[in-house]
Length: 280
Image (cartoon, rainbow, N blue to C red; front, top):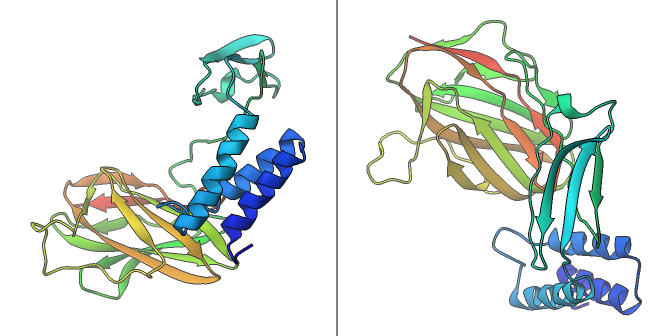
């Protein structure tokens, strides 16, 4: 197997194809092979070649077919999509009010349909944290300080986090995990009164820098309403991520909890409690 997990999984997929294994076994082998891929591809050119060869053989065995897919609940149509002979995907959003008696039906008129069912729900403004797979704690520091003046853990704070506008703060996330995990997404929403500071710009304030991150956390992206980072692998332990924000607009704002979850299994997650931010 040349000491490569990717090569081993690719060979296993090839073996299942040669043995005309059932489709559910093939799908499981394909998912396991895909999960070995990191953000930049497979670990080596040899592994990438093995994986692509196996996936090409799988694609020839299970080619895409034109099909019509319909979603209904209690006999009432909710949505439908038509697919051609080329690989494609589509999303159908179903409001919970449309699901009658807890019954949701997904039908395809031909071929094999692969789908993911994801359930999301709104959180109240005072939602507590959640400890499903990770423990997530958010801390707020004055820029340049290592002493947090606000800590948001699993319980919602008894009083709002209050500070002033025109200041730069260090937001720190502490992530605790008790078992090895792969492909971890870290997502921290920003309250409307804060804007994230991108320290990679030459025009950004160079005299103020955030505290250091653990080296396992990278791939950071700054958006208007959130900061997202990625970790390929985390062993058991406690990890920290920091970024700078600037308080820009006075007012009272909701501050949703920071969420950490597994990219291939978002139901395995952790979340800090929501809080209220007051800027004066």
